[in-house]
Length: 98
Image 1: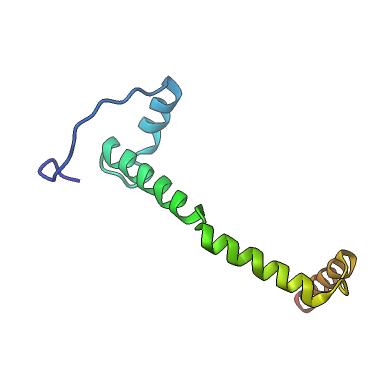
Image 2: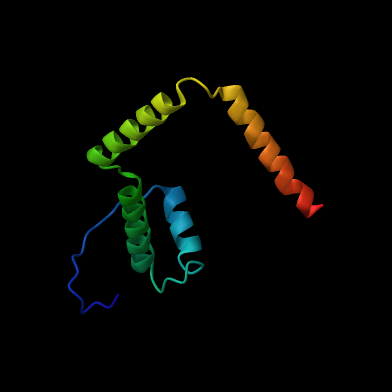
């Protein structure tokens, strides 16, 4: 980011270990400056938060789908059956690789 872009200057306080890590790592990341490294880290963190925040309506839909699936099986499936199926499918996957 060049200094001619619309930016805001601010002061931050870092612990000694964070300052050391910043100094050590900003070039490894491909950043041209510590400022660029910090901006990339903040953007990455914000993008991650955006990914993990679940909309309340979507969460309600997932719950209703789960309830419907349980009603459809009417207790015919057990946890032990599903584990056994999973183990069998994993064993089957390993067999072709040997």
